[in-house]
Amino acid sequence: MQRLIDECPYVLGCRTHYWNPNLSRACLFRLKLDWLDWAAGEGIAVDAMIAHLDPETIQPGDVVIGPLPIHLAARVRERGGRSPRLSLEIPPDWRGRELSAADLRRRGARLEGYRVSGTRNTLY
Image (cartoon, rainbow, N blue to C red; front, top):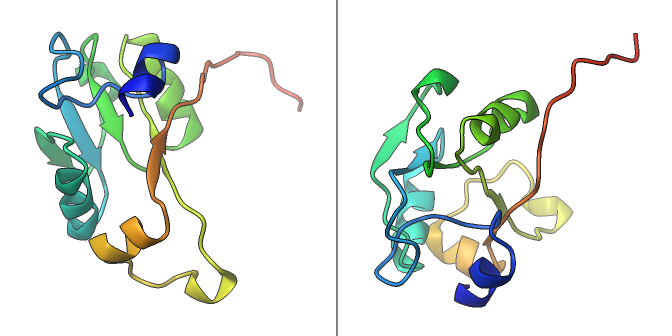
């Protein structure tokens, strides 16, 4: 994970004892408690769990982990934050199923970053 952070500054910013100490906050957005257990097992320190994200509260360096709609992920980035995605490969028969922290580990859950930016242009 540290290699990913060093090579790709938009990948992660969740605080652990060896990651960037200058980050403000790391929070999980609308994730299940099992995901919090998974994060703890990965050494990711979570400062808050939030049910509703107000982009205006994002400070530079904040990290929001969770299924943000794309326009909110863009707002997080505009305000100097990051919003890595939890990615994992699951078979079709696992879709819709509640996943435990052990399931997440078994299926290779990982945080991945994407560059997201908004545009005012529309196609319609």
